[in-house]
Amino acid sequence: MAVMHTNHPQESSTESSTEAKAETLIRATGARLTQPRIRVLSFLLAQQRALTHHDVLAALPGDKLDAVTLYRVLEWLVEQGIAHRIEGADHVWRFSANPAEGAHGSHGHAHFHCTRCAAVTCMSGMPLPARMKLPEGFISEEVSLLIKGTCPQCADDGAPR
Ligand SMILES: [Zn+2]
Ligand SMILES: [Zn+2]
Image 1 (cartoon, rainbow, N blue to C red):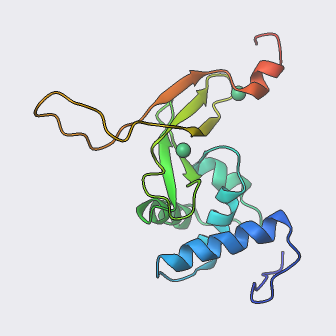
Image 2 (image 1 turned 180 degrees about the horizontal axis):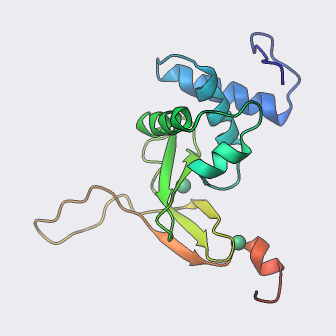
């Protein structure tokens, strides 16, 4: 696949629009715009569900990315608040691009783990309470909610396996 320079915006296919969005988000951090960062973020932005390191490595279009490079890019995206990670019920981390541009605390939504296909999906429409009253002496760092069940796709498959 040829490397496209987005100085000349292409016709708005999904791919070029997520790529443009990825560039904008990375540029906003003031950090260097590198091909691996753009490729990984643009790929994450196009996904309906959260992906593991392994998923991204296997499904990323174009040249295969080095596993360590991918790991660093994912960590960097999380540090920058552009993506967040979710620990599935199987204790494997999934990565997902944050739903709103520059939104702080976009980590603050529920996640759904399908126990049949292991897909983890952001429930962006289900925000978690920003503040929770805790007993004295308890200091909250992070709140997470993982819902386990069957995703619509697996429910459609009908009979249990
Ligand atoms: Zn499923
Ligand atoms: Zn999420």
